[in-house]
Amino acid sequence: MRVFDRFAALVLLAAVAGCATVGGGADAGPTFPELSGEWSGSVTIGGQQIPSTLEITQEGADLQLLTRVPDLGLITRGEGSVLPDGRMRGSFSYNLECPGDADLVGSLTSDGTVLSGTLLASDCTGDLEGTFTYRRRAEPTRSS
Image: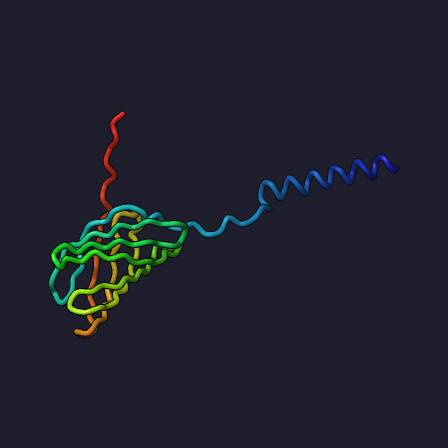
């Protein structure tokens, strides 16, 4: 019976190891929509639409933002995060008439091409609320 017991134990050990490899392994965690890349669009504040671009680099849920608003002479860096459902939040500081902070709160469309939401800014001139809409810039085609 000892040989049979050892054989059964080896079979059981192999079965447990197989289950851990196939389906019982560590959870890979949530996946996040890909926001990396260049986005072009505008912010709208007080009914005025202002062209801007947003460059995003992403590592997991963490975002690094580079915002350019040429009409205002503004180039600023910020950071944010994205949730698995496509909602995002970002913030950056700026200095136009005086130093201020802005927050972007938005979401990504299901096809991944449009990022839009609200913009909240605060500085010495007061609080401003607006909207933003950015479209993902097409990746340049590469010739072989």
